Length: 243
Ligand SMILES: C[S@@+](CC[C@H](N)C(=O)[O-])C[C@H]1O[C@@H](n2cnc3c(N)ncnc32)[C@H](O)[C@@H]1O
Image (cartoon, rainbow, N blue to C red; front, top):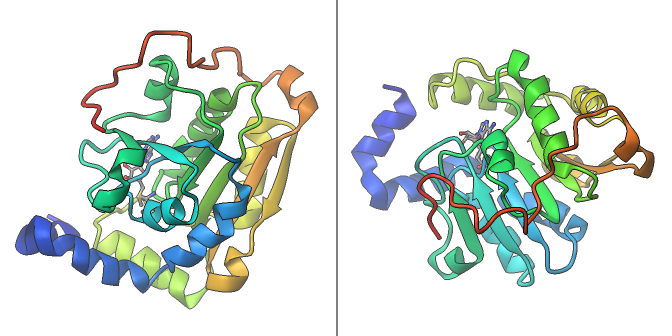
């Protein structure tokens, strides 16, 4: 069992989220993460939070933007535990759901996609497929894709890498730089506009980038033919969906 798993067992459902809050604050300021993204999200958007985890980053964002709602998907069967009770009605959770499952299940088409600290734990050889799945999800729409991750090479980056490996027990973790992320998204998306937010300046080594598909990318050879449409199927019912 990882140190993190042991701490969860020891502290239980009541105290683990509190400890988690202080532990996370060593590595990232969630208020700054939310502020960097807040103006990138369209009015009234349905935001798809891919790999939402415990949902802690959503609290600041949902408070800053009362007009938006969120659908959170994650491979993990236990998600959303840190979403504040008063915000839960604005978050639909799809535990045990990958991007691919969401596409196949005809999940509602998002107006904005958020991917926060999800890329660096994905083994490097699986990342291209992940980006391709995100590209397919975007289809011929134009939802901004906001990706938050951690730039390697900073003392705090080494600390977070060490913590992921030896406290969370995630041995495959490997940080992705802004330049590498830009290249990976360009490869998967074809024509894409990439822009960095203020996050790196505000909370280094954390960064976030906003990607938007450019108009002529829709006719490119990238796979985008099976975009889920909100009306394509009756209400999608993924495994263990909770609201
Ligand atoms: C380090 S956690 C980040 C959680 C949250 N976004 C945050 O910033 O606190 C990464 C999460 O991504 C999820 N994940 C990884 N690959 C995924 C995929 N292909 N589809 C959905 N979730 C994925 C993992 O299960 C994990 O919960």
